[in-house]
Length: 450
Ligand code: GLU
Ligand code: MG
Image: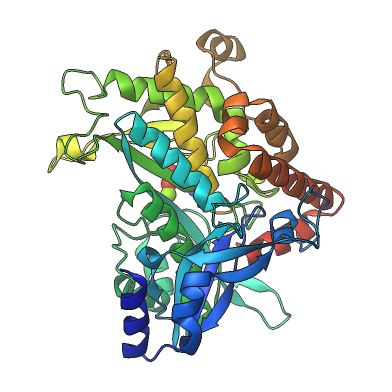
């Protein structure tokens, strides 16, 4: 779609307000809105935003970041390609916006522009990335005392949990269809009130935009049903966490050949595929600060919870950081893909996917070798065996992951100085704030913000 088509579509649908949204360094979704009468001009000029917003953490505490104080402005310029009419909000539409400087360049601290840079870097190597974010989420109903309880305590994949969620799930599926987002499957998951709905893959930028629409849609449709949907990584400390595993495959520039595919290989994986895995595993300690970035994320990443906790890879190994997903009978070449388990829905999808691409491309550039696959839960190897195999426990806190990110020269260079500096400062401030409080404070804030 172009700008004119967006304006026409808004008129035809009776839209009054259009959201220009972005995902920030705290990984929350924010934005400003344009009324239909000024939509055309605001799409061209963008809506002004203070530079300070990329120094704001998820508690709305402004952090001291050089160049991101009260003086200075950027523009939120929406991408018409991302346009959706919102089926869950009256007379409303939305687009994802890029942060653009007043001299019309992508702002160095813009996460969406970072992902575009990584997509361009991959393209320079003849690679296009297809991806999707596979979310788990928790559905709660409010209780009379102002709290909440899970809508079901049913078993994993059980039809009793399907019944508990059927009305809201039906509306969520309809809302995705209305936004041209294709649902791949649905099932109740292991945790109380936990459900999962993978959506179809698409080009990397579209996949990250879809992740924003996913978060928005699930939360808003649930709200319209009087429920609370949470995509917090670990909304209930004693229940399974919410992952948002990233699936990806690498294609040639025409999108015709899956570069991960080699029919001769034991796992049908090409040398490029193995190198990409090795790059991801090499950078994983720092990458976690982008893919599992919140304080609450590290409550999820425990051994034996199917979230992954050690740097390891394996075919269909759901305790490995990177799982090679077995291909589908209907399309062996097209369906060879990899899954990063160490990712959750409290991440900024532009930073998570951009970081993943940067890590993988480094693996290809240096022709890294991921070593032997883990064919059992890596948490069940002895400590000596893990050491011999080069398998390491992840950083166990947000602070450790952020330190690893700062030490990772490849990821820091990819982010660039403005984004790296502001992100580290904002996320470290969240660590300080949550570490000083109790678990209830942590859960409350993550439940309602993700
Ligand atoms: N809930 C698990 C996680 O935290 C994933 C379970 C699964 O394999 O689907 O990622
Ligand atoms: Mg699952």
